Amino acid sequence: MAQLIKAIQVTSNEYRPCCVDKDKRALFHRWENRADVCGASPMVGGHCAGQISFVQGIVELEDGSMLQVSPSRIQFLDSDEKFRGVAWPDELIPELTTEEVRE
Image 1: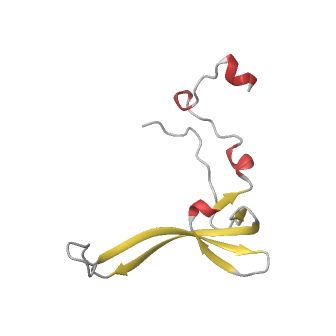
Image 2: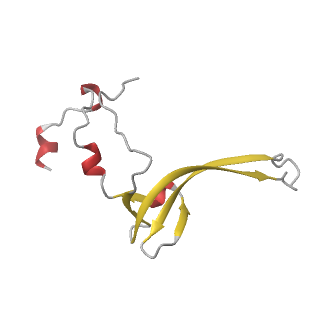
Image 3: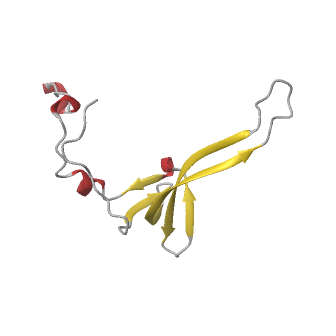
């Protein structure tokens, strides 16, 4: 598997600007791993009891309120800056055809 030549580093005390649901400006604080216990299904042949695990982002809205949100609801606004200077291995960058460059 190919690896990045230079890793993107985000320090733990850095808050990243982001949008939540494409319209709420926020500061991203960190990722959180969550786990919840779920009981057995009452249906015949249903699932047994267990645990469900998922990741959420902790974000702070402009009014100071905090939210736990799904990663798919977060859009980072500083990605151009973070990706600038990253040296991608050649095999990860497909060659563009002349037609694709024109588009």
